[in-house]
Length: 460
Image (spheres, one colour):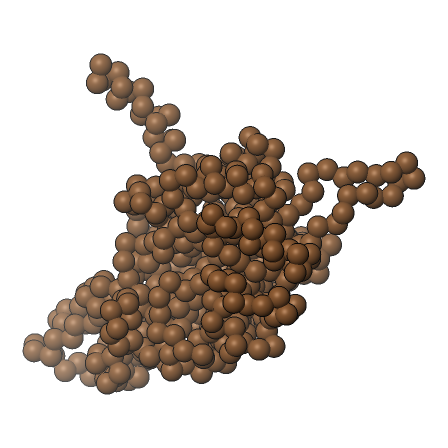
């Protein structure tokens, strides 16, 4: 049994004041000049600590305020109001919403699971992963020392091809050759960043974080030179064959894009290094299920299915999600008796800790994360960098050690949430998450079962 896995987190403050969800509007006119102002009795002392930040050109009270509303309720003239911050509402997009960005910021700073004492006041379901509910029927009262005091829960997963059967000779000697695999302690790898204000410091911070976590990082081959000494945690993405066989020795895995020559490239790489694991990067699009079956049938070690950065199946105009692609591929591999032979990695739109669990329940062995790593570096998902604009938080100028700890903190919080979800579902082994769709409820299926007959009869 693998030893118990723990991620050491350490509070790592942001370099810039974060954008708060709500702002305080403080009207001076009509003030009664009370002997003891409600601002002076703020239990968080935000009115004294507030300042004006020239970096974000805003009052820092929006970041400091904890939304307890005591000042709003306590002012006799009702001169203090709370209002939504328009700059906060403008963060991100429809997938990386302001709420998700704020949560990931907080996790990267503290390494702790975000807790809302006011409960959840949002929608009951939504698109993508939000249309899935997990079965928490096994949840029990937590022990005094929390999740780490409960019975052992393993988050270990293996990457590589497995034999469909084992053969032995008359003496009991194993005849089936042992296939190479890599074992990582968490079902998450770092994927290629789709955009960002890059610098050698950013790539090194990512690689160091992957090393500390014991996981892997997919990295473009042109960035490998700046990451010497970290080869054990890198997966070079080989768009070309410029990386010679002599340089493959320090890597357990490589990744290549899917294409007409993918089989020949795989054979060539295996001839250079028989113990090398080759991952094939397949876009999640129409035909990707059929393609996954072809690759698995031809002996692929790993199939890495990649949706667009928002988690949408490419070319579907947002109507299909990564979860749909995973379910389709997983089911097809099961039907072809190939599922246990190949590792399936899913990437694109993995924005929150719960998405890791849900993607695995749909059928993935593990997931790749990208944009949340940028958010850990204070990214606002503004995408200015795509148009050559200036990054508002100068991500390229980070110090590598600071960036490493922020990513480690984020994954530490995600890992604890993974443990919480697995414990609540009664699953003690991350490898058992794969394709456990009996633990899932899909809103579209529930609505069809509940209301489909009513509306179909009404229509007739």
